[in-house]
Length: 174
Image (tube, rainbow, N blue to C red; front, top):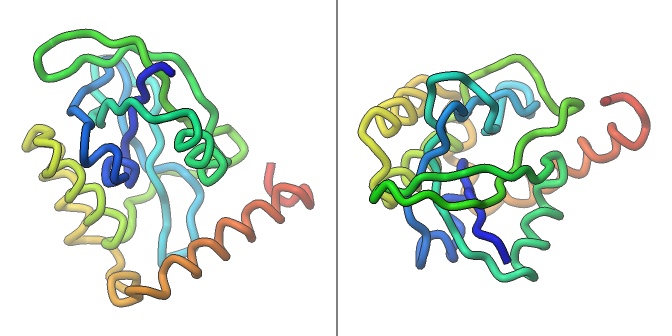
């Protein structure tokens, strides 16, 4: 199975933590234009073409079954082919997930909870300081309400994803 370039919260996937390596994709950037849940989770990460920029993330060799489960959860994204460059400048053909048009919104900063996850993933994988500072800035400015949710956050976000799916099926979204 081809390598995967992951970003956002997937940098903290247990397989990425065990065997992932930091990498970037030229002429792309990580943006925050995935529709969210009002002020609680206003946006999520997406990768888009952006001349002259670098999108930082992690290269991971997922087993087919694991990647299939990830794609089910990340239903609002499609897979595209890209070339990622690791810290040692070695190039890798891989795939990554990019957002489908019907799930795009205006760019908005992520919540403090999500930004903290991004910062932790970037720090763990030794992604450059400029990226860490960007995520830390989002954390400092982001809505802190989701930080205290603890163990109930996963059911809440599962329900939110379900609501988005229902909106798509009903034609109210996209």
